[in-house]
Length: 142
Image: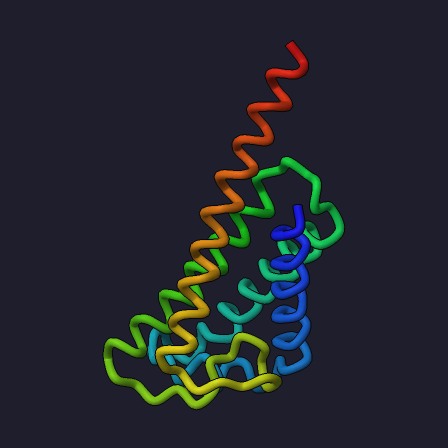
């Protein structure tokens, strides 16, 4: 339960920071060199919406056994980890990872990759815990 609340708070903060940085988000994402410039505002909008949806759901309903917010969280974690890994692997210079928009900027490096790996591990832990809780709840209703 506490993991869901903490990760919900982090994801919500990420979404709020990116939304507050909306004019800068396409330029921040452009540093990753993964899509045409015209697609970046749309990509940013989808990521921000996913972060806010999952983050608020996990934050306000930490005891929920719903898999939807966990899968959305997992998708967001995979997106950020994938962007970071491909940019790092290609040797791109990314001065602001963009996780919080213009706020709490971090240069892409091993520390950001470690943070992304932890987010993926937490996604796996939440998926496992949610499935176990759903199994227990189903067994209790029989």
